[in-house]
Amino acid sequence: MPKKKIALAVAGLALLGISQIIPITSLSASVPAPVTNPAALVDSPRQEVMAWINEQAKDPVTTDSFQFQTVNLDDDDNMEIIAKHNGAVHIGSFYVLDRQADGSYKLIAEESWNVPRFQLDRWDPTRYEDNSEWNSQSVQELGRVAGKRLFETINRTGGSGVDILEAHLWYLQDGKLVEAWSGTLQGTSSIPGGQLIQIAGSYQLVGADTEHPQLYTWQTTQELDPDTGLPLSKKAETTTEILSWNNGAFQKTSQK
Image (cartoon, rainbow, N blue to C red; front, side, top):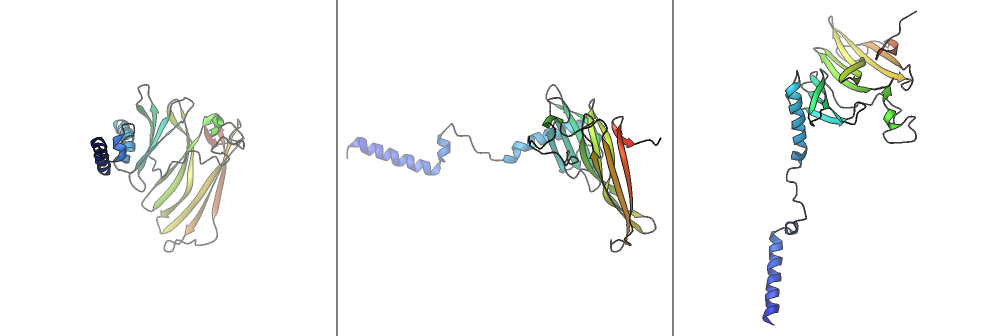
């Protein structure tokens, strides 16, 4: 065999041997290096948001139970940040941050709400998530009540012998969180003397896209056996209210 062909064969075998040791992707500069720690890509923004909150909040984030989302809460093009910190079963904080001109975020709202999860538009069961023709309004107008972009946040609150889930309906106005209504969805409460009361409630918004929206609310209470947790009787007491939109909130209509 000519010496030139022998040299080429030896070089080919050497290259093949090297390729068994070095991954083929490392031989191409155009192929990006693999990510060795994917969590690091998302942890940096998380730490940054936590730092913004802890620099400004009355109750800073102190545990790993922390989550945030970017969402447009008002009518400008900038995305706001909502965040929640769960400190214990009935202890937590809810934060709203507004984007500043330099790209940082300013804390504009802080509530002592222990939020199980984000579900801002749960109150509107008629809303389709996409640009479906079934939506009665354009996407830009969905989720509005009397011109306000309304949101719901759940707070799990309570204490010794009390465990309550309450709903808060709110919106942003002039850089501040404004609460439109709050009420109990469910819970249990121990009363001195050995009584155990169960509470179940809900609400429904009617005419959200009209000039005069109304909020129908109801709440049922029933006494339970403190030992078994079962109802002591079939009797339950239900109260209802019809609230009207007035001065930026749902309020009782004055009787004339």
